[in-house]
Length: 126
Image (cartoon, rainbow, N blue to C red):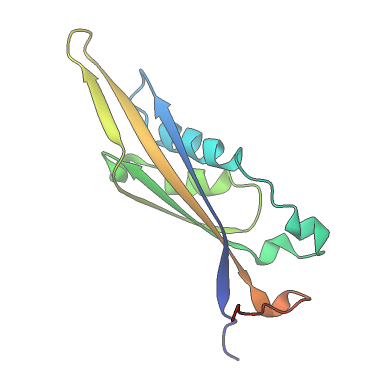
């Protein structure tokens, strides 16, 4: 049995930071929460769709991607099957005078759904 094609339904972005702790996971979690607070996925309730079938792909941009706990970020998502990848991005803001570094993370959240499971037909515009 071949896998159903997935269509991207949502792309949302967010920004988060950890101003004093240099915690890349905390900054990533805040960026994801920022993105989530911009969205309301009412189509699942409106069309009676199973949100467990939704695949969620999260890309986190930080200056040190290897310091992000991607499993913790995935666990913070309320719906769908999540995959989280940390990549080089975001920024560190160094305050040499105080010996601190503020971590800034960006997040892109993409939600995909198997359109063959949707009870309506997508029609291409002519």
